[in-house]
Amino acid sequence: MASISTGKGLRTARPISARVTLNQRIGRALQHGDIPYKGIIVLAALSVIGLMVGVGVMLWIASSVTRNSDGLGFITATEWNPVSDLFGAMPFIAGTISTSILALVIAIPLGLGVAIFLAELCPPRIRAPLGFLVELLAAIPSVVYGAWGIFVFIPTVVKPVGEFLLNTFGDKSHGIFIPLFEGPFFGASYLAAGLILAVMIVPTITAISRDVLLAVPKAQREGAYGLGSTQWETIWQVVLPYALSGILGAVILGLGRALGETMAVTMVIGNVAQLSTSILSPGYTMASVIANEWGESRTPAYSSALIEIGLMLFFMSLLLNLLARLLVWSVSRRNPDQRV
Amino acid sequence: MTEQPTQAAGMTIVPAGAEPAPRGPAAAPAPKMKTESLSVYYSAFRAVAEVTLPMQDRKITAIIGPSGCGKSTLLRSLNRMNDLVSGSHIEGKVTLDGEDLYAPGVDVVDVRRRIGMVFQRPNPFPKTIYENVAFGPRLYGRISKSEMDDIVERSLRRAALWDEVKDKLKQSGMALSGGQQQRLCIARAVAVEPEVVLMDEPCSALDPVATIKIEELMQELKKEYTIVIVTHNMQQAARVSDFTAMMMMRPDRAGEMIEFSETQTIFTKPKDKRTEDYVSGRFG
Image (tube, rainbow over all chains, first blue to last red; front, side, top):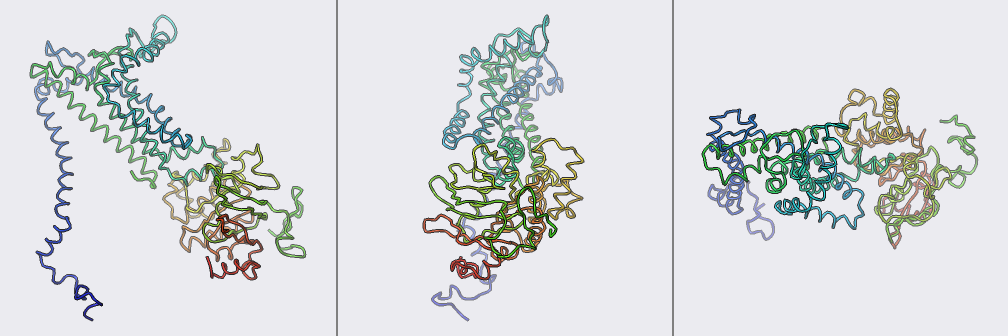
C-alpha cells in the first residue's frame, strides 16, 4: 500500500524512526518552541532559588560585624542602645512574635467566621458583593491602615479595650491580677499593633478560607445532611474538617503578613525597644526597627545589627513556612482525597 | 421473613409469600411511603409532575426512566434533600406511615434520620472507617464506647463490609476501593436505624463485581428496610426490585410517571407502549 487517497505521499506508510535527520529534529523542536520554552521555564525556576540564596547570603555577609562580635548573645540580649554600641535583638523578636500571636488569636475566629458566613450561610445575592469588599480590604496600603489606626482605631477601639483590661486585670490591689495587662497604658502598644494587624490579616484569612470552603464537594455536605445533620453540625463536623488543610494554609499566609508588616505596626506600637510582660505597654518589632533606624545607622556595627535582625526575620519566615508545610502535609495525609 | 405478624402497630402487613387473591399494586397493603400527586419545582420550572407512587414496606421499589426525567429529583424530595436547593418547592404530598413530611412543624432533620440516603458517588467523610459509621449515631446524643463499637460492627456487618475492614477500622474511609466506599456509605446510612433507605443510582460509579455485591446486599437489607432505588440500569431494576415505576419526560420537560407495577409485569407485559420500548432497549 503506497498512499491513501489524495495524500500524495504525506500519509505514506513509513517507519516512524526513519528519515528524520538530526537537523529535522532540531528544526521541529525549535519550530514548536520546545527548546526555547523549556529554557525559559528552567531559568525562571532557577531564579527563584537564586533569589532565595542571594538574599540569604547578602544578609549573612552584611551582618558579619555584629555576628562576629556578639555571637548568639545578639539574640538574647535585651538592651538596645546604638549610641553605646549595645545591640540586643530580644525586644524586637518578642515584639514581632507577640503582636503576631495577638493578631492571629483575634483574626482566626473572626476571619473564619466571615468565611463560613460567606460560603455557607450567606444568601447568594449578597455573597459576591460582600466577598468583593473583603478582598478590597486586603488591597488597602498598610500606611493607610496605620494612619487610620492612629486617628480612628486607637481612640475608638484600642483605648476602651485596653482601659477595660487594665482596670479589670491590671490592678495589683484588687481583683485578679494578670501581668499581661499591667499599666501604664497610653494607647500605642503591643495591643494596638496586634489589633491593627488582626484587621489587616482578616481579609487574607477570609478570602482564602472562603474559597477553600466553597471547594468542599457538595457530596460531602449532602452526606451529612442525609444522615440528619443540622446545618451547624454539617459545617463543624464535615465541611470544616474537610477544609482544614486549606484553612491552615490561609492562616499561615495571614501570619506571614503579620510577621513582615512594617508600616502600620510602626505607626501604632510606640517604637520603644524594651521587654515587657504587658501587652498594654509600647514596644517595637523587627520589621519596624529596620525601617525606622536604617537611615540613622551611621556606624558599621549599627548597620550590621539591623541587617542581622533582617537575617533573623528571613530565617523566621523560612522556618515558619517549613513548619506550615509540614502541618498542612500531615493534615492532608490523613485525608487522601485532598491534594495540597 | 416469612413468619411476619399480620398485625403490627395498627397497620396491616401482609407477609410477602402469602398475599391474598388478586395480585398487583391495587391489592397491595398500605404503603410505608407514598407520594400523592407530587410535583417538584425548581423556582418556576416543574421538574416532576403529579407523581403518585406507593412504596411498600420491606420491598424494593425501583424508579427507572431515561436521563433528565426527574427520577433523582423525585427521590430527593422523599427525604427533603431538595430543601437544600434554594427555590425548590413541592405541591402534593409525601407521606411516611401516613404522616405528611412537608407539613408545617415537621423537623426536616428528623425526616432525614428516618429516611436515609445513599448517593450516586460514594461520599465517605475524610475520617476513619469507624468514625464514618459512628457519625450519624453521634449526632443523636452521647453513646458509650462499647455501645458505639456494637453499632459500628452491626452496621458494617449489615453492609457486608465487616470482614473486609474489621482489622483496619482506624484507617481512612477514603482509602477503600469504590465498591467498599459505597458499602461504607450504606453502613453509615443504616447506623442511624432509618426506616427507609433511598438509593440514587448507587452502582453507577462502580465496576460489575462491586455492583453485584451491592445488589446482593440490597436483598439482605430489604428484610429490614423499605428501599427505593433510582437506576439507569434496567437489568438492575429487573434483578433487584419488587416494584418498578417508569418515568418519562413530558414535552414541557416535567417528569411524569407513566406506569407503575410489579417489576415482573413492567418487564414482561407493560401496559404503556413507551415502557415497552424503553425496557426492550428500543428507546432511551
